[in-house]
Image (cartoon, rainbow, N blue to C red; front, side, top):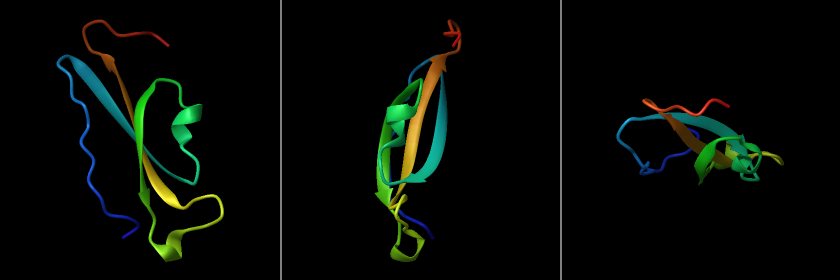
Length: 70
């Protein structure tokens, strides 16, 4: 097991939600186009490294009936 926590995601009617998982020390949402939120969970000690001390969950989405074209 790398990490164990819970996160509550904001669900919306007529919305397609996408999730991305990354290991990093800094919040990868700073470089993410279209991300709406992020949350870090500490990695267990033997999976940590200089550039990755947390498992990050990033989320974003798009309207199903009126999508934004990126």
